[in-house]
Length: 299
Image (cartoon, one colour):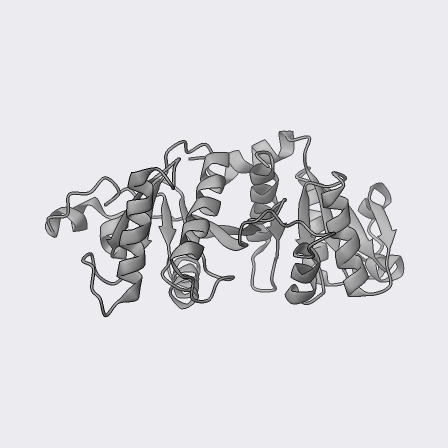
């Protein structure tokens, strides 16, 4: 799988790097936009109030080369930004200073949105100091308590990102607290069902195993010690969390305790969606835009 450095290089070389930014009236999203411009990662199209955009950008000269489309309220800005993607005038959608629900309402509009028939899910990518290969995690932000069908789609969304990153047959671990199916632990039942769907060919382009505990998914030594003989054990490329709490806790543990470099995007729509936050580092913001541009090449 590519490193973040390689992903940045690919994004810089892409001709499909136009990013429609809805309501970029905050310092956080504007910082990400200006960084992307300075690194030649993306070609932003800004949708919002031109005066506020220029004010928050400190009247940066970088704005002179950007297209700014005037809209007077967040909902209209979201609809226009989504329309740019739908019409092929942008390949990535990015959230500015508006509620996530406002942006997603425009994305999911039955007539004018970016629906594909799939659910939306969050896919995070980590480069961990103690690990040679990069690691994907889903879903740490969008789907609170996914059932088996939603987990099937979460897997497919994550596998699509892995394919864009150069992994032809990623190893997918359905994370649980135990390796054995327990009727009192619904996540283990879901994991077994997803594994069976993979074996039957309904989920393709990857190898799925589960239930697997985290240690056995990423550590060959731990798997051997427990006597687990499994094609995914110890070599997982993608971790699928049983619910949003587990996914979110693991995400933050990797970043704040493990020192992992990270990026995250929303997939499942007709184009990748970038949602940066105040807690994201400069490098994380850049990496998320680069990941979205790279993932968007395959859509």
